[in-house]
Amino acid sequence: MTYFLVDIYPYVLSFHIMAVLSWMAGLFYLPRLFVYHAEKATVGDQLDETLRIMEYKLQRYIMAPASIATWLAGLTLVFTPGVVDWSAIWPYTKGAAVIAMTVFDHWLMIKRKQFGRGENTLQGRSYRMMNEVPTLLMIVIVLSVVVKF
Image (cartoon, rainbow, N blue to C red; front, side):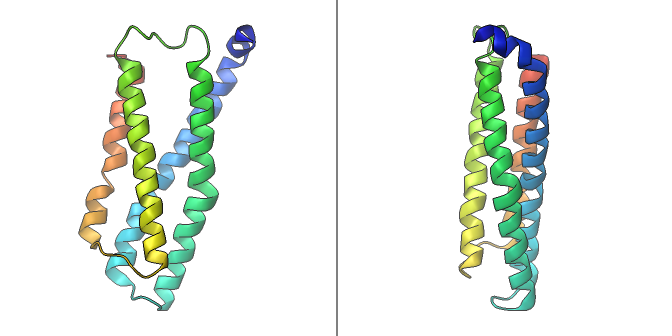
């Protein structure tokens, strides 16, 4: 089994990168949609309906599959011999940041459902600030993997 993982490593890594890019695109875009939703839409108006559909489809058809694919490919990479040096700090910093990214994704899911019920309580400014979270986590993840600190 381990030889098989080594043999398919370049394909799994490629798939992982593609999945991460798709997931990150959604993590950047959904809070931006929330800004417009919170600032420009009124519950029940045409813009509210349009944004609800956009948010749902982004999360359901792009972000959810991409996050699952990211996790599956990432775990496959973790179990591939020679990929992770468990005596270093970087796997733990990356792991913590990926878990934080997943928690953020689930927070966005909760917020999307609140918008769907017309129960949003946050202002656009809050979503603007939250839009920076994936960027900060991405920095930690990329530096962890590339610099291996």
